[in-house]
Image (cartoon, rainbow, N blue to C red):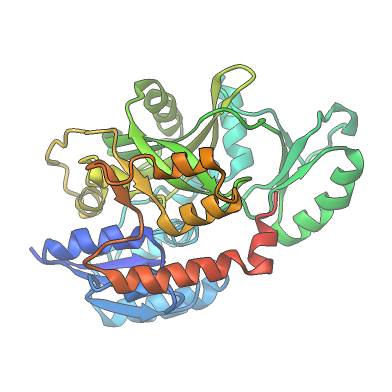
Amino acid sequence: MKYSIAILDGQSVQALIFAKTLSKLGHNVILFCDSKYSYGYNSRYAFKKIVCPSTETDEEGFNTFFIDYIDNHVLDVVIPMNDYSAKYLSKNKYLLNDKTNFIIPDYSIFKRGYDKNKLMDLCKEMNIPHPNTIDLSKNFDLNCISYPAIIKPNLTSGARGFKIVHNALEFKKYVNPIIDEFGDCHLQEYIPPGGKQYKVQLLRVQSKIIASTVIEKIRFYPIAGGSSCFNKTINDARLEKLCLTVLEKLDWGGFADFDLIEDPRTNEVLIMEINPRVPACIKVSVLSNINFPILILESSLGNTAFTEQKYIPNKYLRFLSLDILWLFSHRFNLTKLRQFLNQFGSKDHHYQELDLSDLKSFIVGSFGMVSKIFNADFMNKKNI
C-alpha cells in the first residue's frame, strides 16, 4: 500500500536515507524543510518539498503551518528528524493523534529522558554509570565543584550552550549568560579525552525492542565537541543492555539514540544523553542491515509483525565534508592523513551525505553545512 509520509526537519542529512528508502518502496515522501540550502530540500527522492517555519526557532509558527497543512492534505505517517520536531510531536501528541500516525513517547516520559539533568538523576537512581552532575537550579555549595567541569543546558542539542570552565571565576563568568540564553542548566564533571565514544540506537515498540545497533564514533569535527565525521557499526551487547534498562525504566516507546563516553581514567562507559530521534549517521545502521526507516514506518502504523533483520556490523560511514575539514584542521599531519585514508575504497566504506544518484543534495547540502560551520554565531553556541 502506498502512504503519504511527512519527514519533519527534512532539511537534515539523515532525511536523505529516509527519503530514498521509503520512496523506493513506492511511498510519497514529503519533506518539511526550514531551508532550501540543505541536503533534504535538494534530494531527488522526495515526492514534494515544502519550506516551512523552523521547529527550533519558531515552534508556534510551525504548529500553525503544520496544522493547516494536515487539515487540508492526507498525511498517513509523520517522522521527526531532529530533537525539536520530536519534541513538537510529543508535546502535541494528543492533538495530532486523530490526524495522522507517528510513534513518540508521551511528553512526561519524553521530558524525563530528553532533559539531560533529569536523565542524570535517573541514572543515579538506577546506579547506572554517568558523569557526576550538579543541578544548577537548586542550592549547591560552590566549594563542592571539581574543575574542569562543563556547564550544560538541560534542553539543547548539538552541544549548543556547552561551556568548559576551569575554575570558580570562569564558572561565575559564564553560568548566568548561558542560563539566560538556554534556560535551566546543570554542571557536569569533565570527562577527559582519550576514551571511545559510542551511539546506541534502539526502537522499542509495545515494551519490546524491535531493532538495535551500536556505533563507535571514531572522529569528530570540530575536534572538541563537534559532530562525528567517521563512524563504524560494532557489536556490543553490554551497551545495548545498559541503554535498554534505561528505556524500560522510562517506559519509552519509539526510537531512542543514546550517546555514551568511555572515561579513560576508569575505562567505564558512561551514559551522557538520549536523543529522541534518528542521528545524522543513521545511514550506517541501514547499511548494517537494520532498516530503521521501514521499521519506524511500520511501527508508526501500528504493525507488529516485523520481518527479522540480521545485524551485519563493521560498516564504516564517512561524513565527507566534515571529514575533509577534520583533515585540514590537522594541517595534513601524516599520521592523520593515514587515518583519513583508512577504509577508502573498501566495500564496507560508505558516505553519509554523498550518493551518486542524488548529487544535487550533496553539492547544495555540503555548501549549506560548510557555510553554517563558518558562521560565527552558530559556532560560538557550540564553543566548548
